Length: 149
Ligand code: RB5
Image (tube, rainbow, N blue to C red; front, top):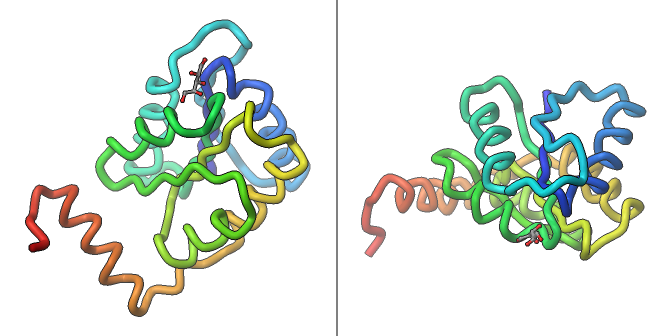
């Protein structure tokens, strides 16, 4: 199950993502927003990320204007590793190396064609573990207030 969400600026791209998931028979929960009317990205980020952390959803895909504000908000939720991506390589390796569980994209940055490619590679790429596990654990340690140095 995938959570999807956006603010007003990301709404058109979130709708493209929704159509893509529907076409591919991938189950999703749309946490909103549901129209291009002004809507703050932090609300959708928290709603979607809470579902990921609770185990109700495996991952989330979030859209705002730049992909940045919504990724910053998402990364404030404990247990979330969100990455704002606008290229294929980053979308692939944030899964493979960072075990990212949230993909963020900017509707004012990329078009629907690239966005669906990023969604596809993000969802299909497995975390490689190994040497990368230690680094992801260090991110979690920072989140838990531990000092790494
Ligand atoms: C909304 O106008 C815009 O600021 C927002 O979607 C996002 O780009 C912020 O990071």
